Length: 279
Image (cartoon, rainbow, N blue to C red; front, side, top):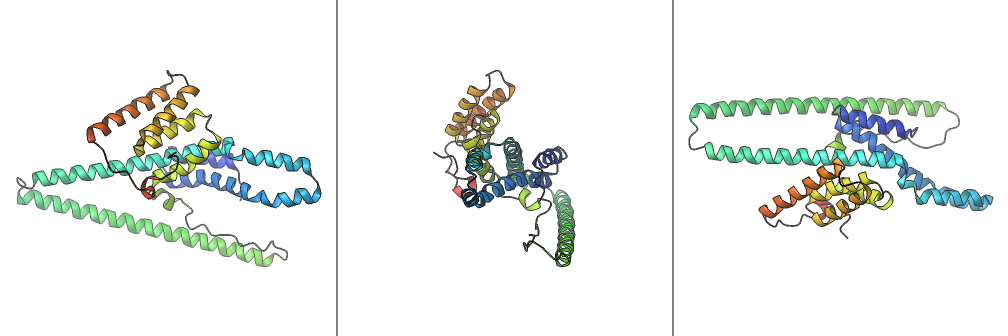
């Protein structure tokens, strides 16, 4: 991998503008994987620097690793990925609300709905099911085609490796999700966003965008004390007249009012809502 992180960040943001959630998430999370590789590769240099007595370079390495997760490229990619996860969460909530409203409307109209309306509704349901099945088969065909293409490319790479007399002996892993479909199909977007948010709050807490995203994540989780904490930190970094701070404040207090009207709700499990940032 070339690990051209500026291009991956630009490509991810451009794909998001186009509405291609899966590929956008794939590009942005690739940047995170590069930083994981950088952290893991540092261990090879500990013994090397001591063995070669390159102590000045060793000190520079240690200082780099202390702040590597605060690099602007990681911040940019993590911010974009968190926004996508929040969007996925909001879309899932909207679908659930629409389904609940449709179910309530159907129950209310059962007493007055005549046979013709029932036949019409059944016909619409059959057509929707047929469209859904067609979409599923199309996606399955696309996934099979992508898998076949990846397997073909892997075969070509293996053939080239065999033709090369001196190789490094490493096997290239085949990406089973080249388009990010599995990433976009996550059922725990808030937990996924918390994983990135925890790293940002440790190494980029002085960035206003980090605090605004923390506010947005905790507001959706119903953890209003953590959201208020993030709001106070954002206000220390941005003026109160900033539009993003004003919008976040209104959304937070509106969510608190809605929660007070709805009454207490059971606390979600860590698997559903994440457990990072509780303290």
